Length: 242
Ligand SMILES: Nc1ncnc2c1ncn2[C@@H]1O[C@H](COP(=O)(O)OP(=O)(O)OP(=O)(O)O)[C@@H](O)[C@H]1O
Image (cartoon, rainbow, N blue to C red; front, side, top):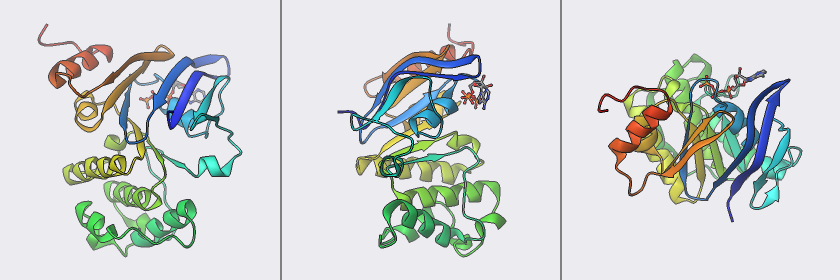
C-alpha cells in the first residue's frame, strides 16, 4: 500500500483549474522529483499532498486512509518545506532544530545522535549557536534542512530546494540527507526546475503539466543522459542532439 497517494485529485483557484484527475502514489523509501514549467502546479500539488491546501475533487490518502486536513496525527507524519524555508523567531540553529524535533516527535524525543555530523556536512558548525535570522539565505535554508532531519517525519515534501541558495556542499549534503532518510523508509518528494539535478538525486521523476501528469518514470535502469534530454523536451528545452 502506498504511503501517500493522490487519487483523481483536482484543484482550482477560483475559476482557474490548475490540477485535475491527478493519480500518483508514493512509497516509503523513495525519493521523487517533481518537475514542470513555471505555473504547471508543482507547488500546488505539494500543498495538496501536505494537506495545507484544500482540493476540489478526488482525494489524498495516507496509508490508504483519506487525508483529513483537521487530523493532527496525519499532518504530523509529514512536513512541507516551502521554497524560502521557515524557522522559529529568535532560535539559534541548534535550538531551531530541537523545536522542530519536539513539535514533530514529541517533547521527550532525543535529538538524533548524528546532529553534529550533519552540522559539519552542511557547513553549519560555525553558526550552530547563531540566531537563524542572522544567517545568510543559503545558511538559513541549510538550518531548516537540519531541522527537517531532526523532525524526521515519514513524508518530506520539499519545494524547490535547489533554488534556495545552497552552495555545492549544501547540495551534496541535501543529497546525502534525503538518501539517508530514504534508507530509514521516509518518502521524499521535492520539486525542481533542473532535469540534471532531478535525475541525479531522485529514484523517480514526475512531470506535471496541463493539469495532469505527463511523465512518471523510475530513474533506475534508464540511460540518464537520454532521460535528461527527454525531460528537457518535456520542459520545452531544444534538444541539441536532435
Ligand atoms: N493563491 C493562488 N491564487 C490564484 N492562483 C494561484 C494561487 N497559487 C497559485 N496559483 C496559480 O496556479 C498555477 C500553479 O501555480 P504553482 O505555484 O502551483 O505552480 P508551480 O509549478 O509551482 O510554478 P513555479 O515553477 O513558478 O514555482 C499558476 O498559474 C498560479 O498562477
